[in-house]
Image 1: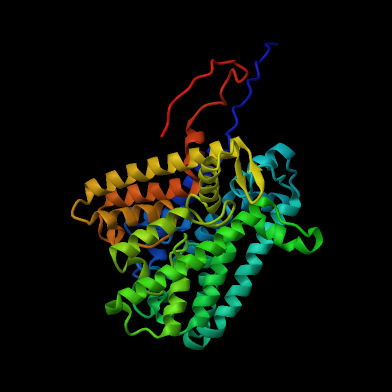
Image 2 (image 1 turned 180 degrees about the vertical axis):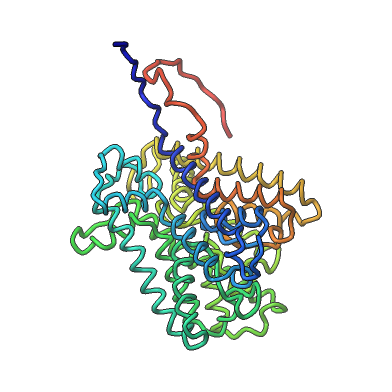
Length: 452
């Protein structure tokens, strides 16, 4: 009997699994949305528009080329909501959750790999973690939906219940899709400028989704543990600083640009500035023209969008911890310290290297994306083009109007930029590279390079 050589099957690396999984979900979502039973007109929808919409939903971006309420029927809207939920929680977490629910065993190494897109490095993945992530998410979304029903059900009846859940899911996942086109296509949440209740509830749901599951785990256990990790402290501090400073700067913009905001009351200005500050960091809900009012406000919004939310959250961007480490590293160098120090904690050089790698690859993809989109749309203002590209990469969802009025090639490029932004530029590069570097123990000569 011949001996058969059993070759080991080459397993996909976590980064490859993540990229392939998101690609499959976007493809399936686009095909379903393109079919007649997904649109209100009963006609086929352009496949490019469907790819863009599916990518925007799965990557929890929120940029739309067609109005969500006007174009899609309830079935199509539900598909978009499911794509948002899957993309927000991470398809790996959902798959693992249901595998555990039916009793399928999960090895330690496999669980660690599965957790890589949602948790910080070194956090062990267990049944407890996965169940808590999903249950916590659904709980926050359900409570948020119930709070929104107080306002939406009286105005929209039974459909208001559906709108409340759709808005809560979109807000928690930092997606930015909404159904308020029921009032007027593209109106967004501007219909609630004089109703701070809806804006504040939505903003709080966005903040909860943007903190990250690791932070929530520690906050829930705080009464028992009496302490927070450095990660959670940095995330909470950065969020507080960014929300307050963003609100103040948007208030200044409103005060200066009286032509656009002169009719707003003081309370409306404070509410809309707070909402814009929260939404600009990856949510993309618009309650006022603040983020796109002028070139200055666009540039400031670009900065907020680029910073984004926390690692392991439903939001995008290069992450608040990345910015914190960069600032802390620069400050430590100026003070003559050899190590990066944050809140009296020394940060390992490996983390600093990963931070710089993330920043470099993010800027590389942004510059490349801006160059390609600007070449195809050279009639658009450069700031508007940069605004659209950063919004897509950071999975924010604000739009300068470029996506809706652009050609198919631009839409596909922006879809790919959203895809990169969601899985992460470093994860994308890891999925394209081979095995880990060999000869790690190789001794190399020491070299000096002048900088500065």
